Amino acid sequence: MVKPILTIENLSVGFQSGESVNQVTYDVSLAIRRGETLALVGESGSGKSVTANAILRLLPKSSTRYIGGHVMYDGTDMMTCSEREMRRMRGDRIGMIFQEPMMSLNPLHKVGRQLCETLAIHRGTRQKEAEKRALSWLKKVGIRNAEKRLTAYPHELSGGERQRVMIAMALINEPELLIADEPTTALDVSVQAQILELLKDLQQEMGMAMLFITHDLSIVRRIADRVAVMQLGRLVETDTREVIFTNPSDPYTIKLINSDPSGSPVPVASNAEPLFDINDLRVWFPITGGILKRVKGHIKAVTDVSFILRKGHSVGLVGESGSGKSTTGMAVLKLLNSEGRIYFDGIDISDLSRKQMLPYRSKLQVVFQDPFSALNPRMSVAQIIGEGLKIHKSLTPEEEENVICEAMREVELDPETRHRYPNEFSGGQRQRIAIARALVLKPEFILLDEPTSSLDRTVQFQVLSLLKSLQQKYGLSYLFISHDLHVVKSLCHYTLVLRNGQVVEQGDTARIFSEPQHAYTRELVNLSSV
Image (tube, rainbow, N blue to C red):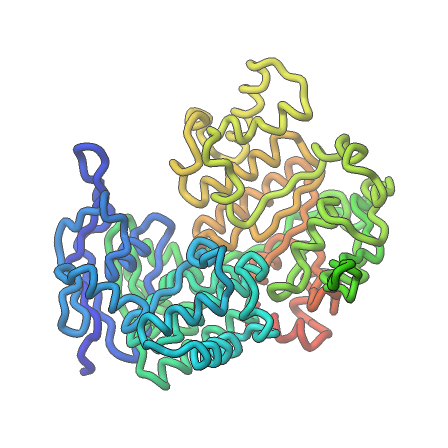
């Protein structure tokens, strides 16, 4: 039996609030051996990230209380280490990949500098050698045009590219243990497969252990040796991958396994009238240079995309990061300048000014990927949901409050919580608030930009069911952007597959997934196993 490199014994963690301590984990015990991958799964708020951050003592010092237990790393008790010893450990012997790269990368420094910095701190590597190694790692994690990305700032990269930079930063010192907290959430299936394959290769090469936190059970099936399931701060089941998926013993584990997106899109009339008719949509960003800032070329984000979205239907946009999915969505809503023709309900809106578009804005709404970033933390839920009403409707305060309460009931939120703030809600509840904000104006169309990718499977299942019921009730039309083909198959009637800003295949969703014609589509379907 291989000796564990990390052992967590009866770890209990709480957070100080006034005079009381709110306990969030209870007697958590885990062991990870060299070369092994342990997947830690569970719903949002189950204590997964708290447990992971406790290993490196990354929880807020002022409010965190370690109520009991030990974290032993290779014979060292992490709970008694000095801060100086912990700094030596972090990023060197133990690497960590965080879920949200924009919160972890320094927006003021270029990517290359941030990668070189970790080599200089822990290895004393000189600048030229560090740059060479940084470039090598950007290529390893699948970033295109890696040389250019070294001199880019984080905001100049796509979400998937930023996540890959974080992965490179965590692995560049070749740690003995990698803690990966939802590292592939923002990645499309093809890049996800590359990253998972890379992590497995590095494990074999270096004998690296990995604690992999995720809500995606399809990833767990592919990468984990053992699985630990958490619920409400407690470990409810730990066993081998085979036992967890074939013979789970805890009711909660069974519920998780049965929460994968399934079912078919809502029934619709195939001859419904078009709501959007998009013809040869093109979004090219000019590249300027020289003293006179002349146009030297273009970044071809979207080229000649055409499709029809019918009333009450859902159209899915799938493809890898940087393929033009979100750009297409923003251009359809005329939030980006574009060429081509955009017809909304038979009216050509292509050349309308910002002022001329105002009458249409209440009919066109959007729900973004990250509800926490999309909701103003200084506004109450009632203010967030009612913001659009103040712009587009003339209601008395009583009427406005009634409409807000009704919108909250529609998305299965308690109207009594309307005076609370976004930070008081879970990820799934925040996404429901975002949907309520879009729904309150009774729109005809909602752009859904990765609305479930940051949610765990059980909450994702609930939000998808909600979106389907709202669509059926109000005849809503959705443009649904996602890299999760299981979700697209469950919700969308028609699907476009984008790559490098161009449509490589489009058609009925059932046909796309059962008989893909293009090699890239076949690759996506095979990787997702839908």
